[in-house]
Length: 425
Image 1 (tube, rainbow, N blue to C red):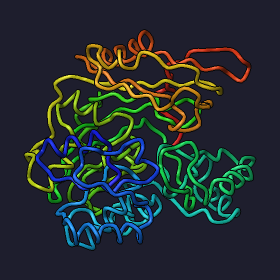
Image 2 (cartoon, one colour; image 1 turned 180 degrees about the vertical axis):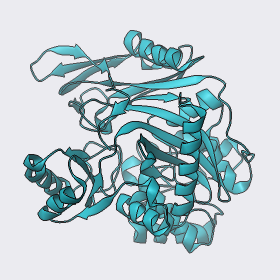
Image 3 (tube, helix red, strand yellow; image 1 turned 180 degrees about the horizontal axis):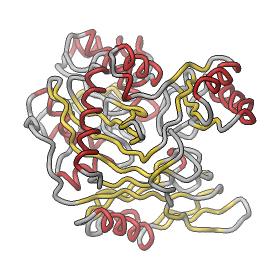
């Protein structure tokens, strides 16, 4: 569900018969011509999805449902339940998608220690009551968001009214400037967690959770957008063991038994605290980092594991190198030209070069991850060398020219992250 052309190619390489349910908004961008069957359906509309799936079940049949795109995860869970296919069901998928439901599940499962305190935000006085209990700053975010969309801090009483106005402006509306075909549905408040940010990239085999690798993430100094990913982590063994144990307990509580997960942590004074998680692999070319550092393709694993076509990973793998992702950003304006992307992909050490804008697009200063213009992922012997290699390619090979609001033509620039210890949850 929601496949890319590359995903279909990997499934075909595994020898699989592939049926694709593609969102109408994505069909032109990813027609999935290698698939055996393609149907256009809004898979975020679960009633329409069930109708389309039953037609395929009756005519062609299928034995597994996989989605690796955020809007398709709940639909995949529904179909797993309807047709008795195993895999992650709708209830568990919704726990991952709904960040407040995730927090409540952790408390109910006795795993609240790895989560931050949270509460729903439904009326203006909720902000004041949360501040009285947990103090300032705290974080406001959509319950179903992704890519840091709509996430912001409430820093003190003076910002409470503005926070409530922002919630009113975003709630119930489509996520602007993103490729995600769904709307913001409810907001929540979350305890502020201080500490550096990491993500645990994992794959679960019949309920056994294997930590494939830990990604170091640095955010923008003035927003929640990720500006740098590096793998493997430079945490010491004790800290890595703490992340591994927290991740395993968290995924147990969430009810995940099979497939990939991307779980974001802050390392606080009280230990690892889960910020959010997804029952898919991470975006921002994190799967390419896993391949570059560990030689494991989580996408191929997600496609092949339901059929026993990939070997079970018995122990956390050892890194054979390092990999990093760096991003391009810009101030507000209009994209006039993009060059060098194909050349970048052929450069030594480059794992991926992706641009998310095209000529003529309007862009803005970064407020969330969807405002980044593109990325390069690179592999090297060490983490520092991988960062330098990605920066070199972005600096020397790829050029995006943006005509600013003042009429001046400027090149996009490499995103400079804030300090590793960030000040937001």
